[in-house]
Image (cartoon, rainbow, N blue to C red; front, side, top):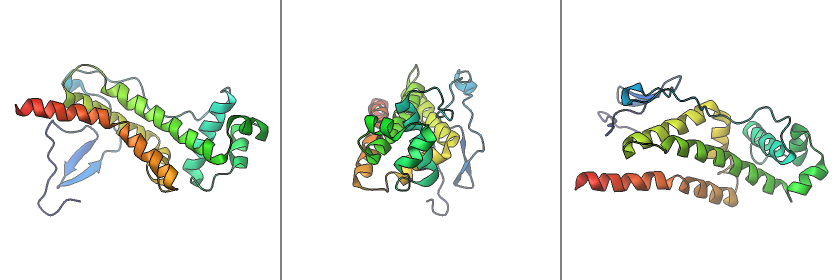
Length: 193
């Protein structure tokens, strides 16, 4: 939280989708990926997870159904019966793929994180100095969270609060983003020299 008189200072421009208003952050209603001011065109890739699971393999249907159920009901409230009903698979098919409800829930959590990390990493790739690349990555992360707010809450609040194993997985997920910021320390050190 900002105290009276404090303001946000962005070393490298502003992060598109956020602005400073009387010293406080305000989320704009729509985050665009237009960065024509830095020579980029609008990106065609948009975040989002599958909503229609028909036609997917049993395992994928189970995982995506689990993601949606956890986002709707909470980590602890989802049952195997909920999952098999939503996924349209048999109980036998579920237990051929997963030994327990927890194994399925954690696999679904990992699946969401894989999609998010991949999306953010793709935004980070490319030419340009580190500040521009990390800006693209942060915009992608915010865009993904705004596209799927229930899933964002599930991955950042609900699952990590569930139990120690979930907390451990959450910490591991955050570590997957560390390389993006390590490069920033190297960039800053070069700028100071």
